[in-house]
Image 1 (spheres, helix red, strand yellow):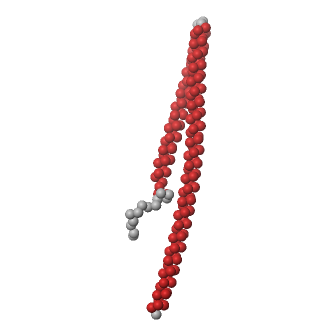
Image 2 (cartoon, rainbow, N blue to C red):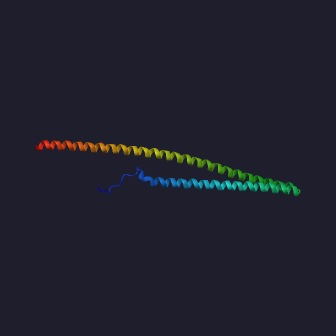
Length: 156
């Protein structure tokens, strides 16, 4: 066999699958991390909703048991408004994260499709090169055959 110290032309061949695996793994981890953040925020929203319900029940109980002054009623209303605002903020964050995750999934699918198209084109190019090499070998054999015939004629 012939061994060469030249670098193999593997940049666009399927041999470079390791790079693709690393990129896809990084994207999967990033998406998984984003999904965990969304889940955590959803849980926080549920907790705030639960706290809000408890606070409302507590407030209703307090109103029934005691005669509340106007000031304490105002304080309770402010607390409810604060909890409602916090809930709205968390919902906005979750909506934004879901939108970003969907955009990232779409981008990942587009990248994947482009990669597949490129790999197919590279495969087609390799096939064409193989056909050209076979044709060259065939021409060389034909030339060698003709040269051999000419040498036989000259030797006679």
